[in-house]
Length: 151
Image 1 (cartoon, rainbow, N blue to C red):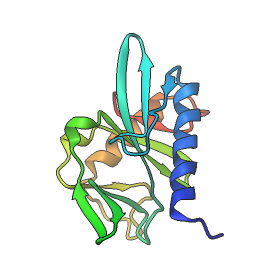
Image 2: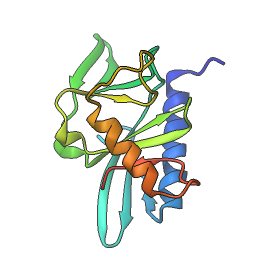
Image 3: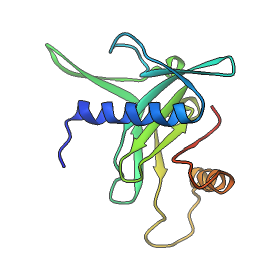
C-alpha cells in the first residue's frame, strides 16, 4: 500500500501519541510545523521534547535513523543535521512491528542502526542495543507495545 511521506509521518506521530498517552504522559503539540520536535510530553513534573520518525525495516531487519532533516525551498531540497540540543527523545515508529522505539539522540553520533530482527546467519554479534531491548522486553508485561530507554 502506497503512503505519501507526510502521511507516514502523521501516522508515526499518532502512534507515538497513543503509546505515550497509554504510558501516562500528557501530550502537548507545537502550534507550528517548523519546530525541531513533533511533541512535548509531560509526566511527574518533567517536560520532554520528542522528535518522531517513521522508518521501515531494511532487508536485514534493521531500522536506520540518520540525525538530519530535509526540506524544500525555491532553490531545491536542503538537508541539515539535527540540533540534538533541541530534542530530548527520538521516537521511531516501525509499521512492520507496530512498535515505537525511544532513545536519547545525544548518546549517538550521526545515525543509529537498530536491529529489530535476529541476524539471518545466526552468528554471534555484538548487538549492545539489541541486548538492551531484549532485557527491557523481558522485564515488561506482554501487552506493552513498545519500549523506551529511560526518558
